[in-house]
Length: 255
Image (tube, rainbow, N blue to C red; front, side, top):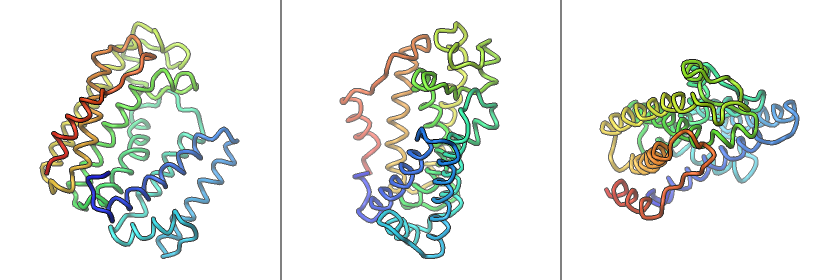
């Protein structure tokens, strides 16, 4: 976020802090009722913020960001809704509609908050968030298949698994001969979302979209490396080397 001026950077730190807090609640091993209560407490804090009330350091910074950049209550609530999807059940092979809703809440909603902090509140910027959020989340899911399976989770869409003959079972998906075909379908969807995000960015202010271009470039590199590694070994980690990160920063970080 160093490409942002201080006020916008501080707003992004506040958004990140909020997302990190509610994500940690969703991942906590506490009983669901405890996690739901804590997420509901944050719903209350968000509602209070939009009445102009802040009670601690995080909400005070969020309140300033909301006032400065016209952040929307619905987007904060959508992030909490996404975390509740993870908190209330172990997600295993969601259908495509549920998968899309999950991606919208945990990723695109964060994007809708972020583009406003970046400096663009246009409909085209919301479109960037819609497409890029889904592309990033699909890439995360493809990167973390083995890690999620170890936790009993499986985020690959049920339709992709069914088409490839892969059982909707986290314990059976790793090493299954149909897994590469299912992953390839999700990778193709991610590529399409990246392309659509790029097209929407062309209708936005170039300077405001600099952080989004950097993020898209980095995740495109991760997806490309996952595809080069192949989907037969999802447990093998993929990393973007430092030289490539520098190249992405130079390519997308210039005005």
